[in-house]
Image (cartoon, rainbow, N blue to C red; front, side, top):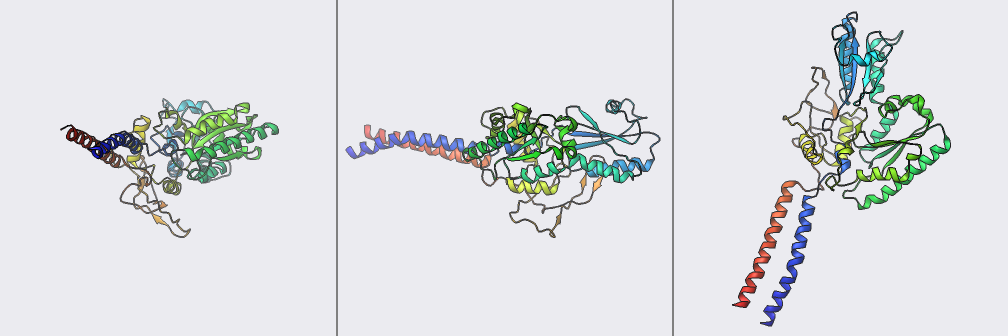
Amino acid sequence: IQITFHCQMKLKKLAVPICLWACLQSYTALACRYTVRDTGFVDLGAKPHRLYGYVNQDTPADIVSTFTEISHAALLDSNINIEIIDADKQKEHPAMKYLDLWPTKSFPAAVLVSPDGQSVIVPVTERNQLFKQTLRSALDVLVSSPTRDEILQHVSTAYGAILLIEGTDVEKNVVARKAASGAIEIVGDQMRMMPKSFGQPPVLIVIDRESISREKILLWSLGLDADKVGEPRAAVLYGKMRWVGPLMKGEEISEANLTGILSVIGADCECGLDISWTQGTMLPVRWDEKVRARVAEALDFDPEHPMVKMEVSSILRTEYSFPGAPFGYTELIADSAPLSETQETSVHTDRTDPNGIVSEPLPGKTVSDGPIHSKSSPTLQKSLYIIVGLAMAVIAAGFFILFRAARRNS
């Protein structure tokens, strides 16, 4: 009798730890498999930049067709949408107001408009130069620059980036650099306690005074005039070239301010915070198949996959339309072995844009039969199985305790 009573007391004492362990396991199973940084690579239909090309009735037909074809091909993998407008036939078009803001009245012409409505003239013609050549050069500047290329090199493996734009005061530039470096060091130490591991800590990317002239479009997208940068400025970037938080100026560039924004990027996407603001603004950039494959391999899931987009949209509580298999979408295999420079495989489906322009097959990685999912995080189905199993174990333990108590009483 004493032995039976002793066993019953042990079982009763074990009941509470078992229930607590089950609750903890349930929490882990239901934990979000994405961090804020992960969601930054998922495009849920953010407002694009728009390039409006203007022609008139006197513009030769071959120039119009060249304008259309080259623009669509050059901007296909970017977040800039192109539209050609006939200024004589479409006088009531909403985009005509942007042309009126600029002194140019010659055709063809082009104006780039950001999601918040600011605009800048894009020089697509030049004296004694072929239109094709000038247009290609102008479009390349819109989606690429040395600084943006440098950011793309780090974006797949680094936690994020601090973009520092130097001002005219050398001492203030030094103070801003020190603040940025301090914030990076703090966040680097915090990364060990974050819910998901990251390859590298944040990186510092500096646009010095000598480089400002070649980064006019990048600075314009941040709301700056390249000719009027007096004080140093700083912005936090992550994911798919997302600018998150304010553009800090002068004394605002502090270790505390930068650390506060950077810390949120590493948080669990279901940590209870309102993270909708972290989607930020996507700066103009070319996001081609090569970059996409590198990012998918580093993340261990394909951020372009429709099912991933649906998951992230539910997390961020935003609408995402899933009509089926989107045009131009192909699935990638994240292969740990990098491709050699001479080894290339092609996507076997044509990339077609809404205007019917078909590009050549793009070099990239092999098309797979299924989406890439995170290897380190459980799926919802597996989580439910774990929860049900643990619940049954707890119930069985409870019944066992009650049964032994009933036997003792009888």
